Image 1: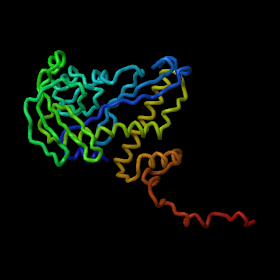
Image 2: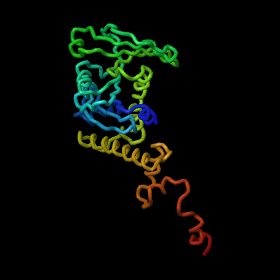
Image 3: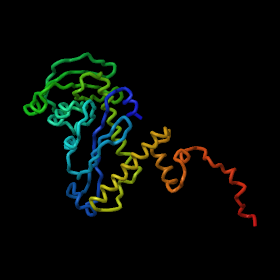
Image 4: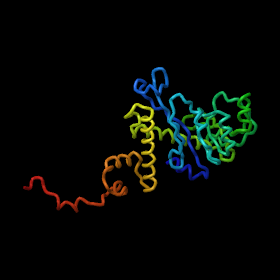
Length: 279
């Protein structure tokens, strides 16, 4: 997995922070009003990219802005938090910085800052600029009073230019770009949860019923991921889930359930089977 390879390159723990909105029917879930004709809840997730396992999840109403999830975290010194630009709040990012944690995010188009220093860049690798900057905004310069690093990257495949902000000054610019790219693992986590664990259909309509079903889905994902890791299985999480679903009530070792050749062969029991036409 991408998270595993990334973890082998870095000594720091890398987390991806994001949220997904789970739509609900307003007539059945009036307590989750999101808009005038829509209901929803949000699942805020901090994904540990070393094994793509969620280390923090908070379920809120659909109106809670993503940036408020930063207030719920206990920053881990030395860890790297990868987020999209919806989490750009310089006061909160500075709190991460003061806690000894690092962040990688995308800059908003209206960023008010000036260049302090430019490092050498590798344009052949898509690194257009690697700069140290200071914020100029009246409020933002007070919220984040120290220098930031700005990396401008042009994707050679899409030709799209992306601008990253980070307080990590030691890693190569290419690694900063790779870190942000790894954020898509949390998107894949949300997609997997919704597609394979039936999180779009709920068996109850209360607040507690919805949250309970979401937590059950997350627990199933984590347990299957642990089984895959500990047994060193090559099969995908989806395949493992399907195997477990059809062998749930059978008493057998897990390795036997996932083995291509069952331990009890058909030949051993063939002599005990009666032919349907034999009377």
